[in-house]
Length: 210
Image (cartoon, rainbow, N blue to C red; front, side):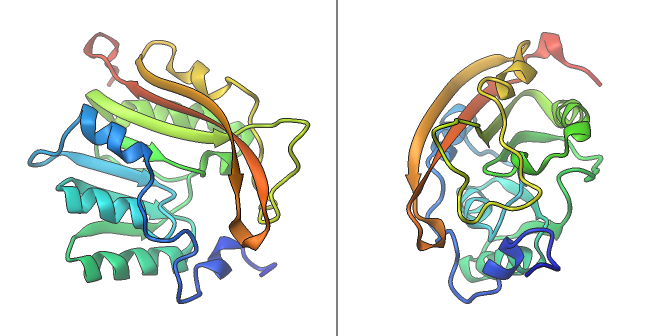
């Protein structure tokens, strides 16, 4: 496992789906604000084993998804095929990925903590340019609290964020949802807690940049 940049590469090699197949609750907020129509494109950053990407493809969106783990992408493709949907899924790194595509919805859950410090500003600049006018961004990030210990499956490249830091990147966007919450988690079969900041924001036309 030490040869992997993330231990999830090993976790995803198991037959079972590490995170299950139930889609994340936040997807319903995205669907309500921007219901699927022909040609509407989504980017899922850090898709894991594909549960959210497959769900959005089933809803009728055109979905692109990437993850650092080869095992995760293999299971994403397998799950998509079993479900009868098409997804453009491939291996890539949140710190270095590039694309000329534009998207109506870009989201990522539990992945921004893998951004290197010197890549954070360029990541948000890139993401916001890739978002179509009136497109949506949803991101969440794990937040540092002195009374919460690190999760047992925490990776060596992961870094906790400070409360509110995520929100500052969307000062000129229309904010639909902001939240900080502490929740229980049982990954690795070990009970623990996380604190997470989440944001759902819309890119307004007057703020459109090339």
